[in-house]
Amino acid sequence: MTLTLYNTLTRRQEPFETVEPGKVKMYYCGVTVYDYCHLGHARACIVWDVVRRYLQFIGYEVRYIQNFTDIDDKILNRACAEHSSMEAVADRFIKAYFEDMGRLGIKEADEYPRATHTMNGILRLIHDLENKGFAYPADGDVYYAVRQFSEYGKLSGRKLEDMQAGASDRVNIEDPEYQKKKDPFDFALWKAAKPGEPAWKSPWGAGRPGWHIECSAMVRDRLGDTIDIHAGGADLIFPHHENEIAQSEAVTGKPLARYWLHNGMVKVDGEKMSKSLGNFITIRELLDRGVDPMAVRLLVLTAQYRTPIDFTDEAIADKTNAWHTLKAGLLFGYQHGEKLGWNLGAGNIPIPSTQSPVPNPYIERFQELVNDDFNFPGGLTVLFELAKELHREANILVHQGKTETPAFELQRQWQTLVTLAGVLGLEAKPEVETSKTEGLSDAEIEAKIQQRQAARQAKNFAESDRIRNELQAQGITLIDSREGTRWHRN
Image: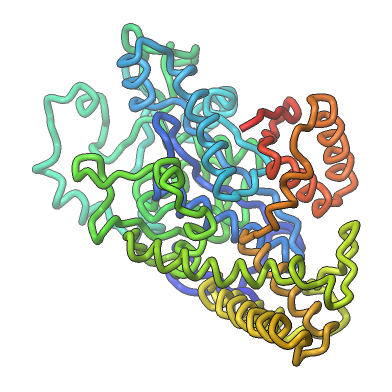
């Protein structure tokens, strides 16, 4: 059962082979933090969260990096409108990001680099491009010379001559930026400072980086020259990811990523989501209506990740009903395990895995399905099969006082369901479970964080995740960074 992935770069499905055996270096182009996250962000973050979970489930050690773009015209415009600063706007919406993703059950990345914290790496990369003849300064700006990179367009499939034929009507020759460029296709690596704007020192004068160079620098700084998976929305293929390849590979002479994966876009009631159409929905708006976060995850995961997805009231209602079915199966052990003689105490239930010496047909079928380009809809069919069987046995137990299937086999089925649901980030706990653990003091929280840090250093990532999930269930969000782990109460 070999994992195969559709690679946007080669336009075909390929066996997954990592740079370093057993390890995955994965980068996801994250959000620009100028507003609350919307349904498009929800879809992308859920997809790549589950991709990471699945890779870990089948035995890979995954280093997952997700950036924040905190230098951008949209952030600056909002700061000006609010008489604030770009940093204050970015900090506010980064905090909101963690709140929203926590509600959706998104596991935190290993690191969240920010453009403002990667300035040395950005300047170094621009300097290297200039030295190699791929970049040139122009009145305080620095531009990438697109025609110098012979493979430009290999990701998107676009050819410069075709783009040039259709570009004449869109070019404003009076634009000062256009006049600085040696070629219309060249793009900015560094922008000279304008009056009143935030700026950083550079060899070319005070200014700020272009968007594309930020991700190239963050990948290089955190993960090295070549990574295994570069992920993002399909809208980023051109120009953002195309330009990342041009920047990074021109300097290193190596592939930036072995596999380029892209999730499909989101529509609302059949139309592209936009503020002008009045169908722009943020994650918090949706969840504050009472929509279950697990129903949102189901809606995302029942669509093939590369295809478009349509958020409608009917679709949400359908997935809410589906979640009730799955949730009943996930709660089976808590509600009926004692009657069946199960010992659920102290978290000592052996959890099945892909490395178990005892064959598990459900796990084998789940893995066979999902290994086909992350076929999560196929994997979900296995979960619903288990949930429906447990629901049937629960009805028999309630009405007849016994089950048709032996108790030990039901326990195995339930353990399997909980495990596979966890791979997809679908979790359900009895109400009483959460009430027992409320009201931790600051000192108790810090002690838990120390226990988690010890587990991470020992590479016991299952224990690390358990502690994080335990705190999250009590309304405490952990944020990891190079400076350590900080936390806040939701």
